[in-house]
Image 1 (cartoon, rainbow, N blue to C red):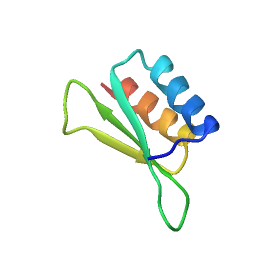
Image 2 (cartoon, rainbow, N blue to C red):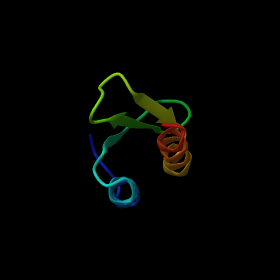
Image 3 (cartoon, rainbow, N blue to C red):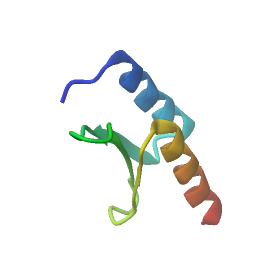
Image 4 (cartoon, rainbow, N blue to C red):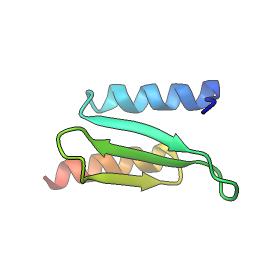
Length: 67
């Protein structure tokens, strides 16, 4: 998978913001742009998906606040 500089920077920002508790990646799609994903390292069953890095950041923050 080839990352652009912007996507790499966004992945690093997500990793830094959430202290390594989550794995972050993106999946390129033919239609609709990239799908951004996060998986909780402590529980492989928890996976979040979003249409942008910002939306994924909000989803992770919301999930962490609900715990």
